[in-house]
Length: 286
Image (cartoon, rainbow, N blue to C red; front, side, top):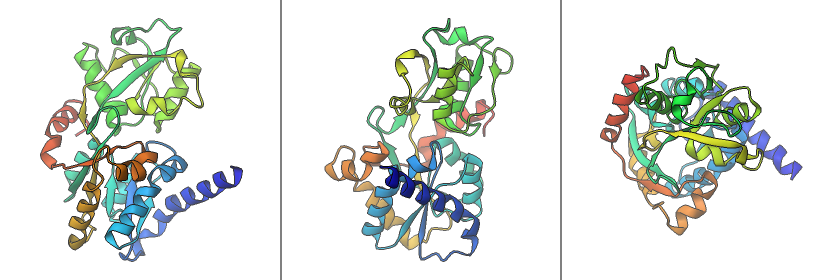
């Protein structure tokens, strides 16, 4: 097990470090960038089967790229260092303002299907039992560009009548969903916002029975997998077809996407994100 962990760590390090030399990389290789909401090691394990599947289905090598953080993902996409991106919908609509991105497929998950939401958690032994109890408290979020780890929560807090600039203390961004959970668990934050599905991922390392979900956000369309302007046009439809073969709930999808905790992919269009654009604009993120 220690040897396997070492290999995984080395592989993850390679896909991160590879970003520094990508400007001169040949386009014979399709670069699949994953937004780093979790650690590079976790994401490498989760999405390696998808990269291998796409390589087989399209006949071209698809390699994983895992930037260091959200800003690095956006910078790499804008710099032409990512050919295909998998990111939260806020990152997608932000990049779409400046780049000719082509949404290929919409991710489907076990709980929400092709939509997802965020949550706000607090310790059960605290006095925080509802979203209104967050007034005056220290809150931690994932990243300013995190859809389900910041923007969705900002909308929920506003809708609950809280002034997001005055009614609570916003701690420095955690950068990762798991760090938010740990900060709340250890008392470094009174409450924290993260993606709903990422809470369960901490069950093996933390006693989640000590935490309480005090609020759920609205649902929004899930993460899109999109083609960047660097992706060759003749390859785009081949890739879209391969993704949509992974129908939610099918045996093939379970085999390829089980490690990523996805059930499959469904069709998507840019217009599906118009509601999110309105929410992001209201939250000052677009």
